[in-house]
Amino acid sequence: MDFQLTEEQLAVQAAAREFAQTELLPGVIERDEHQKFPAEQVKKMGELGFLGMMVDPKYGGGGMDTVSYVLAMEEISKVDASASVVMSVNNSLVCWGLEHFGTEEQKQKYLTKLATGEIIGAFCLSEPEAGSDATSQRTTAEDKGDYYLLNGTKNWITNGSTASVYLVIAQTYPEKGHRGINALIVERGMEGFEVGLKENKLGIRGSDTHSLMFTDVKVPKENRIGEDGFGFKFAMQTLAGGRIGIAAQALGIASGAMELALKYSKERKAFGVEIAKHQAIQFKLADMATNIEAARLLCLQAAYDKDTHQDYGKSGAMAKLFASKVAMETTVEAVQVHGGYGFVKEYHVERLMRDAKITQIYEGTSEIQKIVISRELLK
Ligand code: CAA
Ligand code: FAD
Image 1 (cartoon, rainbow, N blue to C red):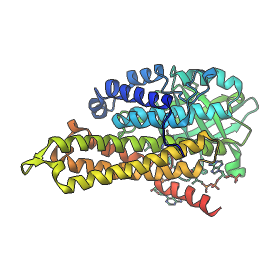
Image 2 (image 1 turned 30 degrees about the horizontal axis):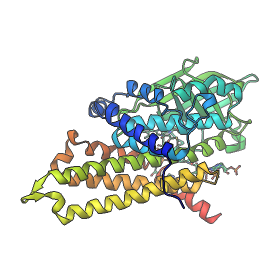
Image 3 (image 1 turned 60 degrees about the vertical axis):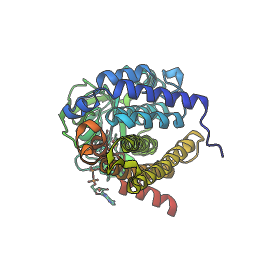
């Protein structure tokens, strides 16, 4: 068993840390406060290769492994989880989905631009009445011969107003249930496609989350991903890898909060000594560090499983379930270590605490991860 990172992985980690500290940290509080999408920063992420990290270089990607992706996600999420969710959706849902299941024409037309960050993508599964219960798709994609007629509403879509390409899951044959669902590539600007209002959120406030409305949108047949009726499996297989990205996001939020708590505990004095000299604070730090290390190992295990072509559905779900819990617990404790200062925006930990919560909800709630894990155990 080898716990050593390669030189290439260490270089990616260092580059992501540098980018996060120099480009994301300045302005992160203001972007959160004003719900401002990190447009310039996302553009730079594309230029640095963070938006198509695992894509084959022949399609403009970095050709890196999932371990490198996890390391980069952790560093970027330490500072700005709103930026890292853009990265996660683009890398592990949109690019991965297209690279693994798209046609050569789809890859040339869309993936090459998505992998370089020239455009960004969105993944559209959730609906007002189909979140965890994802097979209950109400959005319809009626087969009209050479095109699909798309009607319905998607909810909570990350990159909702900034994406150019949307992977939309919709029901074509209701009588076939989940086996009648298709995944379609929808372009921004197609007639009948409208972006709804932006959600005003508790956390990841820099990320643009929107509902999307489709009214008689004509989507050419060549924009279907995979065989007729493959859409639900497409979504599930893509999400299995996506969950590793969100696990790494949760890990980064936790480790970012811990770094801040550690630093503050050595600076702040109470009762004549640094608060780090009080055992109550030391024990909090010890618990944080232990939980974070365990979360990191689960994330790396899932990434390793994916890189070595082993099944990663269970390990990815475990990583997300555990890391998101650690993110919540660690950020709450990091606020506590900061006392009253932790409750105000300048010290960053209150934002990390708010951002942590979403990691227990999206890409499958914690309850859904337990369903995925237990089904694998009982198989
Ligand atoms: N890979 C391939 N196929 C899979 C699969 C996987 N990992 N998981 C399930 N399937 C297949 C099953 O084999 C089954 O097909 P067959 O009947 O042909 O065998 C089909 O999918 C339906 O599976 P289930 O019977 O298990 O379906 P279910 O109704 O019990 O639901 C579920 C399963 C795991 C709960 C699923 O609905 C689910 O994952 N829900 C959560 C949805 C989710 O994660 N949404 C995230 C949206 S994206 C997002 O959130 C992005 C973001 O925030 C940034
Ligand atoms: P529900 O499914 O209604 O769940 C409500 C509660 O019931 C939860 O606690 C849930 O765990 C529990 N529950 C439901 N079913 C069961 C069960 N069988 N057993 C036990 N407990 C259960 N979706 C996309 O498709 N693309 C995106 O880009 C995207 N981005 C998002 C960004 C944000 C900020 C948010 C908030 C959501 C985003 N989502 C996205 C949607 C997200 O994936 C869903 O919110 C999530 O899957 C939960 O669905 P729901 O909100 O409908 O909750």
